[in-house]
Image (cartoon, rainbow over all chains, first blue to last red; front, top):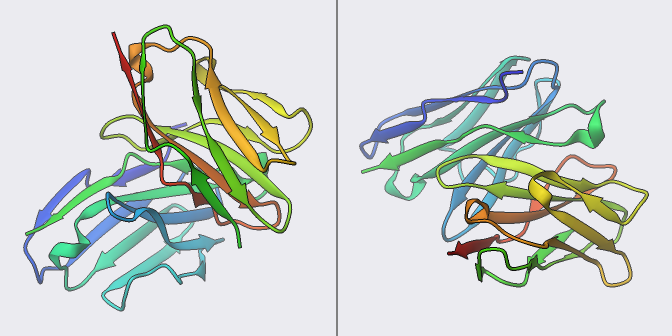
Length: 115
Length: 113
């Protein structure tokens, strides 16, 4: 099992640019979560999907953030336009509703720096 | 809604000493409890989980945790730590009927030689 795969691992961009983060969940998992980690706010849930459908996006900071899950094996988190305060580590996690009490498994994260 | 409080933001210990990382939670419904570990520049890795049954749960790397319902606690322990245990540890809670994980603020464990 390859685990949750995130790309890129590191992203450096300039303020105002569009940023797209990618996630491939564990095969067979049907829930997918996007988190943001910062020193000030810790780990925050941004949005999660069940069976490719967004269930709760109340953690998405503002309209500049959007997430999609076009199929069971791929999700994107997009920031447009990006701002310096978006600098953080973004994690994707996946789980199976039907197995193991829905334990979430995390990817290695994308470290985003917005200059 | 549930919440998690990790009582110590930093815990420094010497190698081979015992350690306890404290976690208290609040919830009005039944919950599952988790401890995750995050090594530098890595994602979160599941250490152990409490779902039901025995209140003493054993995880990877020699860690264990005890669920105490009356005190709403889920403290993590290890009898003898190694340098390689240096990492940040997160306690998390989830309602048994839900999907959202709520994380504590994290405890940085530093093991010194």
